[in-house]
Every structure is written in C-alpha cells, then in structure tokens.
Image 1 (cartoon, rainbow, N blue to C red):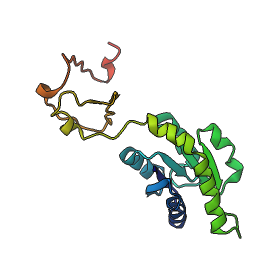
Image 2 (spheres, helix red, strand yellow):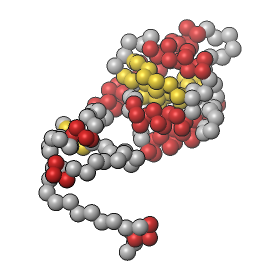
Image 3 (cartoon, one colour):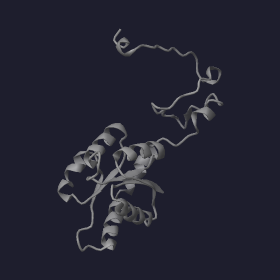
Image 4 (tube, one colour):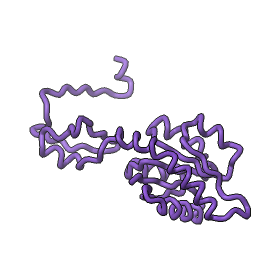
Length: 189
C-alpha cells in the first residue's frame, strides 16, 4: 500500500482526488493539504510515499514548491493541474507524472481513469522509492533506553532540526562525544 498526500487549494478538488486515489487498491490517501506550507508540515509528519500537487495555489506556486521539495526532501510527485501548458516543464523540476484536471464537459469517470493510469504506471518507481525509504522507528526517548537501538536495519534515525533531544549521557551508545560550541561568527575561527 502506497501512502499519498494530496495538495490542492480547492476543497472540492481535494475531496474528488482523494476519493479517486482511495478507490485504487494499492494507494491510500493519508491526508490532504491546502497549500505548500501546510503540505511541508504534513510531509515531515507523515512521510508519504507520493504527493500530488496543484500548480495554482495560494502563498506558494506549486512549481516552486515542487522545486523546493526536490532539493530538501526528494520524493515522487505527480502534478494534478488545469495548467496543461506548464505540463512539460514540471518534469524538469522533478515531477514523475502529470494529470490534467477535467476539461469542461469531461466526465469524472474519465478523469478518475487518467489518475488511475498515471499512478499504476508509477508503481515500479514507488516500489523502488519505498524500499530505500527509512522505516519509521520509535521516538528518541524510547530509543535511548536501549543503547544499540539508534541504528535499525543499518539505517540511522533522522533527527529533525526542530526536535529537542533529551540528555541522558549514561544511556548513549558509543565511546566519547566531543562538542564544539560557537556563535554565528565562530564557525570560521
């Protein structure tokens, strides 16, 4: 089962896309986001296997968000947008798929079939991505009670910069730790 985050500023389109993706056996929409800033927080929290992005969104354009996402947290992204003219350039920005939103008079079934075809064609890529993706692990406090649990299956736990780690020196694995502290200008010195 591949997890999906749907990003679109239209509440009705979020609902339609979510329902269509959930109707595909191998996919599950774990949440939706209204803009790039909400999406960023949900990506950090949920670690989805795939995101769908609308290009025309408030606060930050979908293409700008896609470029930032590929720099900071590369993951498979499918653009679902009515801006078909920008369809080719988004592949240069890192998208793996493009689905144009339904044109006037197009049935929702036809739109759903296009989404399904695109996502099912990406399952090979998604399988490779999820195999390389670190597995979710216990919170850091529970890990510190077991000295050798900071590594799991050869994958080291990623610590988010905003996360505050509790200090339990006696339970940390390994030998010695050297810490160097400096102010903003101290790095060069």
